[in-house]
Amino acid sequence: MVSISPANAGPEEAVTLTFDATQGNGELAGVDKVYIHHGVVTSSATGTDWNYVIGNWGEDDGVGLMTPVEGEPDKWEIEFAPTVRSYFGVPSGTNIFRIS
Image 1 (cartoon, rainbow, N blue to C red):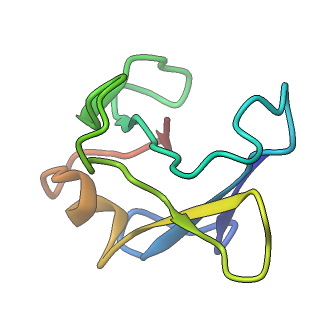
Image 2 (image 1 turned 180 degrees about the vertical axis):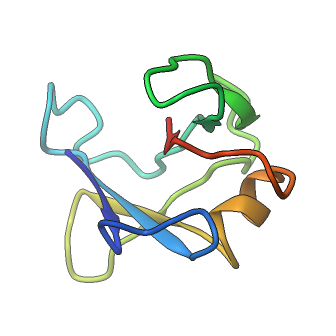
């Protein structure tokens, strides 16, 4: 349903996240817009708390708006660039264990 490229990217690299709306319950298949509400886990490798959250849950305000993947209906992507760290605004020296 969700993939990242490159698959083993670190916090100092750009990452593209792709979402396939036909997977899971498929309720976003065929929609005109897809938003992502996202953050990173910085507490520990097993942590679950989101930090540096981007997006306004339930709001059609452009924050976290994903881009349709050309030629692939119901696939959406967003790029975390120039690096994951800079996109989320995570200070240098703070570990990023995963994107949530």
